[in-house]
Length: 387
Image (cartoon, rainbow, N blue to C red; front, top):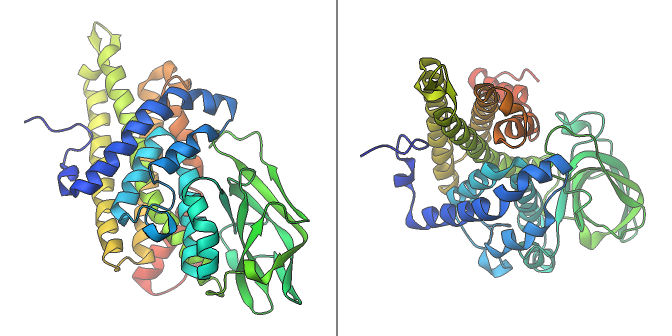
């Protein structure tokens, strides 16, 4: 039997029936609803908000959280497959779901009160309430301990001042999970969009993640009730725990982007005739695409094992860093090389490689730059921090 060109090691056979069903349902959504419009959305710099009800309807928002909060209760591998298929469509779509699920719904579930869980999670799972995650600040994102945003206690409330930068979903969001320094350590707050003194300003002129909303957040003496403070965590372990959840999904997403680029390049190279033969008949094209398949296979196995470790409660942050580093580097290199194989046609958004290449410039940077993840692995190996 011929091997599947995008799954040479038959990784799909290692999935459960439920995991395969999840992947297939998201793949259909991407094929039918995302791919027909995403090139135009990228060109226009528009996030397709009309897809939010469909994402919610498939149970993709907060997919791993318990059913009692209106969520799907899926395992971590299923969530990874969701991220992979969404990013096969576009990194902006996966980023939306990732932020909503891992950076907003997860901290409410993990660090919030039961009242907060019941108040927010069902509506967030249904796509009725959209969240964003405020950690990165204008002066730098790789050193969260140096945050300037401050929360001061004032009676039964907190007064929040500061700003956040590069915030996905910022201008879409009904609530923001905001991390701020206080006299009692770093704490998380659920800031509602109608709180006085809170504002979001969308960042324009992006050449990456154009089909995504990216914003700056500002807090000018914002009064936040203590009931909106996440009570069950203090210190950097709160936001870093959220980032670990998000980074896990990001290890899967770039696989989808790389598969999309291989698919396009493979089809194009069979149809494009140069020197009286298809480009696919040349050694240089076959060597390139064979190398992409090798790298995609390695990334698939890496993320699947990471997901199994996560579901077993054994996943370590260093393992996430290794996979995020490897898989983002894999995808950005394949996207760039696929753009090259398409020649002049590769520079237009009628073909996906340039769009994925540009998006991956953000994905390889956010949730920890490549250098940060290399240093995390280096620290694990040597026992010495080089940060």
